[in-house]
Each structure stands twice: as C-alpha cells, then as structure tokens.
Image (cartoon, rainbow, N blue to C red; front, side):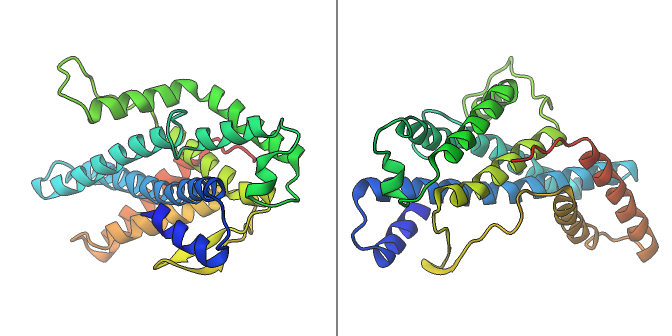
Length: 265
C-alpha cells in the first residue's frame, strides 16, 4: 500500500523519476512508515502488559473478561517479532539492512548513485559513518535479533511440540531496539538531504523535519502514560482506586525506563 501511494506522489512531485530512483525512494519511505507503526505497536504491547500485571496484583488478572485483552497483547507481541525481523532481514526487499548494504557499497563508487537518487550535496563521509553505526549496532544485537527471528518463525509456522514460549526479550530490550531504529531512520533523511514527505490520503501534505536529535526517555514515558490512562479509565473502579492503580503503573514505567539503554545517534 505505502509503495503505491509513494509511487503516485513521486510522479506528482517529480514526473521524471527513473525506475531505480523510484525503487529506492519507495523502500526508504516504506521502511520509515513501518518503523513508525512498530513504535506504536511497542507502546500498546508494553502498556497492555503493564495493565494486566497490575490487574493481577489487584486480584483481577485471570478474569475471563480479560481474555480479549490478553489476546491483543499477544497479537502486538507477534507483530513486533514479525516486523522487527522484516526490518532487519538482509534478504528482505524492503528492509533497513537491504537499503544500507546497497548504499554502503555504493559510496565506494567514483560516482555514487546515492547522489543521483537523492540529492547532489549528500555528505558521503557522514553517511558512511552513519551506516557504520548501524552495522556496529546490528552486530552487538545479534543474539536478540536471532531470537526475534526464532520467535517469528515459531509463531507463524506449523505446531512444534518441542517449542517453548519464553520471554527472553525484555521490555527494556525491545524499547531500546525500536527507539534506536526509529532515531536512526529519523536522522537518515538529514544526511541524505532528502525531502521527507508526510503522506495523508495519498497526498503530500507536509515535509517531516527532525526537531530533536533523538527520542528522550521523557517522550517515551509520556506515550506510555497516555496509553495506560486510556486503559485505566475503562476500569470499573472507584475514582480513588483508579488513581492508586494509575500511580502504581507510573512507578512501573519509571522503573522500566530506568533500565533502558538508549543509544545516542
């Protein structure tokens, strides 16, 4: 879907776009869009998990009415495993790794295609350093990435009687990984000197601009608190009990984020 929208928008903005330019700009746009959705899935997954943990603490965690909520948490977790694997798959047609591998090799050429595809004043050395940062991060996260692929494969293949579902990937690890990817891709348009359009209903309505260098923990905390607030407001508790419940959730959010290691891009 995002590729079709991107293709139509490109034709409006630049009718002379070549097939190769179109291909890589589409990949770039799709990867960014999918990463934004992945971040929102993380917010929902963590918030639902925390919500259920607190309910269980209050003695309501196993109530049959909460089964749909547990299923939703499982759906978000499955989606995160699938999408993280897709974004980090070196064989994927629209993955971050595919994009970086292609242009990393391209930078060594006498006339890099990156200058033709995006813009003529790309800072080659800065872009090369940015690619090295991702490759270093990917190597350091190799165990976590392998586990994500394992969980993706086991959740979307035939029944495996020897499969044991585990929680090796912690909330802290997932937050760190997804925020890194999000921040990394947010900085990439600046290095490419690439106009990053926000698309709504198939039309370019604005140009995205990076206002902050990275995602501070305060921003993540606000998103988690907002999401928890929506969930708690639906509880059939007294106003006082809701406030206590919410404050307990806030303490847990702070404790989680205190363990998160955010990498400066």
